[in-house]
Image (cartoon, rainbow, N blue to C red; front, side, top):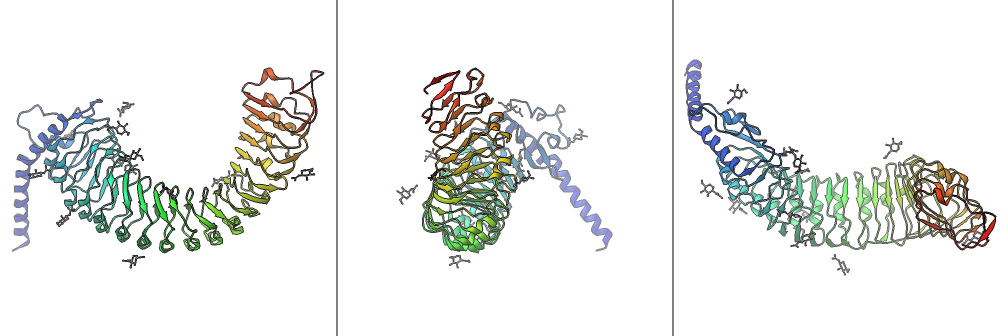
Length: 530
Ligand SMILES: *[C@@H]1O[C@H](CO)[C@@H](O)[C@H](O)[C@H]1NC(C)=O
Ligand SMILES: *[C@@H]1O[C@H](CO)[C@@H](O)[C@H](O)[C@H]1NC(C)=O
Ligand SMILES: *[C@@H]1O[C@H](CO)[C@@H](O)[C@H](O)[C@H]1NC(C)=O
Ligand SMILES: *[C@@H]1O[C@H](CO)[C@@H](O)[C@H](O)[C@H]1NC(C)=O
Ligand SMILES: *[C@@H]1O[C@H](CO)[C@@H](O)[C@H](O)[C@H]1NC(C)=O
Ligand SMILES: *[C@@H]1O[C@H](CO)[C@@H](O)[C@H](O)[C@H]1NC(C)=O
Ligand SMILES: *[C@@H]1O[C@H](CO)[C@@H](O)[C@H](O)[C@H]1NC(C)=O
Ligand SMILES: *[C@@H]1O[C@H](CO)[C@@H](O)[C@H](O)[C@H]1NC(C)=O
Ligand SMILES: *[C@@H]1O[C@H](CO)[C@@H](O)[C@H](O)[C@H]1NC(C)=O
Ligand SMILES: *[C@@H]1O[C@H](CO)[C@@H](O)[C@H](O)[C@H]1NC(C)=O
Ligand SMILES: *[C@@H]1O[C@H](CO)[C@@H](O)[C@H](O)[C@H]1NC(C)=O
Ligand SMILES: *[C@@H]1O[C@H](CO)[C@@H](O)[C@H](O)[C@H]1NC(C)=O
């Protein structure tokens, strides 16, 4: 056959297909779309151009110009995107008439009905996004037959019932998001077949049972978010096979047992959230070799033993949260060398000894909370060297020495809570000039000297507690007129001299306690007992 003949042959063949298509299928799709519209409540009339054309003999595919409709070259609806239009009502069974549908996006609407079972006949679907609605009932089964399905987003709905098991047959899936509904039962083991899956989000449902060890076979998985469910049992050691995993979120559940050392095989992990479970045992020192880690949160468990010094090797770590566990021993000195550390929360454990003296010197430290331990020694001097410190929370420990001078020039500070320690020396001059400082809690220490005059100049302080120290001499005369001051407590000190006279100009003050001084107050020339 010559090239010319071949060309003609193909041309005629194609023409035939086009002619056929133009006369039949698109018109069916026009009425399908109108049937779909009939089931919808469209308060903003966003679909006003979805209407039967005036001329009786419909030519071409006018529906391909309609809002949210995109057709393929053959005039068949390929994409339907009516997201974010406040639409409610019902998704019609007629939708199965859109046999070439590749993308369906009805997210961010107000649907509060159930999805039609006939959705499962849309086997051409590649992407389905029904997220952010109030869909109820079961998620339809049958989409497992859509061999080209790559993405399902059903997050933020009111779905209930079991997760669709047959989706394990949709082996092209790369993303499966069922977060935030009321799904119950366990995770179907059939999902192990999803060898292309990168994202699995099932958090915030009512899922129960053990985490299936089969999920360890999801070789492409990068993100797994299973938290806020009712899973029990241990993290399967098989999760150590998820070598592409970057994001592991199992927070808030009833998981128990030890953190499996097998996780150390996950060399790409950036985020590990295991907080608020029932994990016991020690922190595996091997975690210190996952150098990709950025966020490590093991808080609110029953983890015991010491903080492994190996964590000091996690040079990318920005957040380390181990609060509310049963940790003992000292805080590894090497944590002070982590150059990216911004958040260190170790509160409510049984830690002893000093903090690393170089903490904050090498990193943009923002939040430090080590309260309610048995820590001692000096407060590290460089906590605000980078100028990022906002929260400094040291209360209920045995810190001694004086308040580091560096804090009095730390412009970022918002909260300083150091009560109930053995801190001595004077309150440094300058805290009153910090523009964001709201809380200054220094009660129950061994502070001496005066309250610096600049405290009275603060425009931000709302809460000052210096009670139960050995502070002497008079109060700064205008201290009670700090514009935002709500609480001023200075009882149990050695204050004397004149009581400030401006009770009238304390715009916000609601608590004032300056009782129990070892001297008498002189107020407007007279002595008063407070
Ligand atoms: C779509 O609209 C444009 C103009 O708005 C028109 O030229 C075109 O013919 C329409 N196409 C169909 C298939 O109706
Ligand atoms: C669906 O539409 C929403 C809102 O318009 C958009 O944010 C989202 O990315 C779309 N989903 C997909 C899978 O493209
Ligand atoms: C959707 O409805 C809400 C309130 O019902 C309204 O605030 C919002 O502007 C509406 N959005 C659109 C796109 O019409
Ligand atoms: C969806 O769930 C929310 C929260 O539980 C509830 O307030 C709302 O009434 C539910 N809507 C429907 C349609 O079930
Ligand atoms: C899917 O399509 C077939 C053939 O048209 C039909 O018999 C069946 O009822 C449809 N399935 C659903 C769930 O609607
Ligand atoms: C699913 O949709 C929600 C909002 O509609 C979005 O926040 C989320 O990122 C989407 N999931 C995936 C995996 O893209
Ligand atoms: C998956 O596909 C196989 C083969 O077609 C079929 O036998 C099986 O029932 C399907 N699984 C589910 C859960 O639908
Ligand atoms: C589902 O979980 C929510 C939130 O955790 C909880 O309030 C609700 O009682 C649970 N429902 C069932 C049926 O277990
Ligand atoms: C997965 O992990 C388990 C336990 O760690 C191991 O026995 C198994 O050989 C691994 N499987 C694969 C396919 O790597
Ligand atoms: C956690 O474990 C303790 C005992 O070790 C048990 O009393 C408690 O019920 C468990 N909590 C959960 C949420 O499983
Ligand atoms: C630390 O503070 C500096 C200067 O204010 C700022 O440029 C930087 O982004 C901050 N770093 C972090 C991690 O917040
Ligand atoms: C408190 O300070 C006083 C005077 O400086 C000193 O005598 C005393 O030993 C200190 N008490 C504690 C518990 O540090």
